[in-house]
Length: 146
Image (cartoon, rainbow, N blue to C red):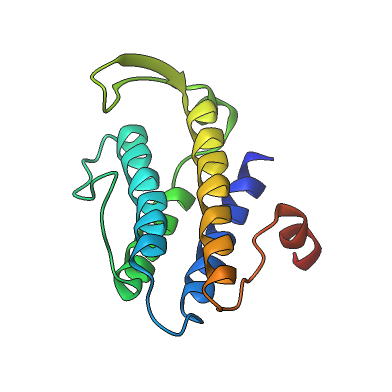
């Protein structure tokens, strides 16, 4: 299921960018939320892979940069081993508050998927209110299409 959730994340990130592109004018607040989704994904990937990220957790990207960053993040996500040993691997990390925690890769990637779902919903709602085309990102829609 984790592999499907990651595939959904990639699909949904792309659909959010496509929705943002339908707005009559770029909405900085919505771009900021979507940029944060990508920044959080990048930070967690960096923790999992041990490869530092130059993307902050709260970046402010334009839409073209969001698409570029998303493509790189998605490739990195697909390269993370999701076999039993890979998912069970524990990582100790320090969060933005300076607190140290230990979680498994499985727990972290589930969090990344859920975190993105929450914020993508905020963006899609904003697109609807801004008179753009709110392209759905629901998991069930993904399942039906794949």
